[in-house]
Image (cartoon, rainbow, N blue to C red; front, side, top):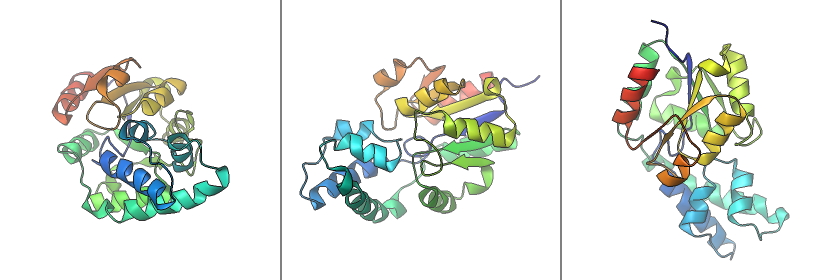
Length: 218
């Protein structure tokens, strides 16, 4: 029986990697380093998934544009100090390996930089499983459709046979803008009720639920 989907694209932070808390703390610490009022946790979580410049400008809208490079430098300093301690969510590795073994094309569309994603793929040991990846410093930031459109073009996958999996509204809106179906995970950056309002095909609280859906409907 032919599968419904040929290409499965994952977000990285908050979807495969348990990093949302570290991102929030790094945004807040970067603001404090420059004597700025740090955004609250809800605001900082809301911008996860965007490219770094877009994320910082939305989290700290009063900062002069010329100061964002300094904020970005301090953010990277704090994030890199702890990223070696971050780990994949329980079940993430098994799900990726199962999809690869089943013959799916796999991709990553992330708000990370290319340097950051390459480091994360190497550290996690998952790099060999992904056929194409796109980062925020290579494409227009989510929710623009560019990352998905470029991954589909590279791998020869049709929108109707592509599935996006993410933990933020930015992921779900990117999928909609690209004409691609999407699944949401509610354990990452954005709360489940906000994700549900985007009407994904499914919303899951843990990887076992996501894996079972993919086995039945993928």
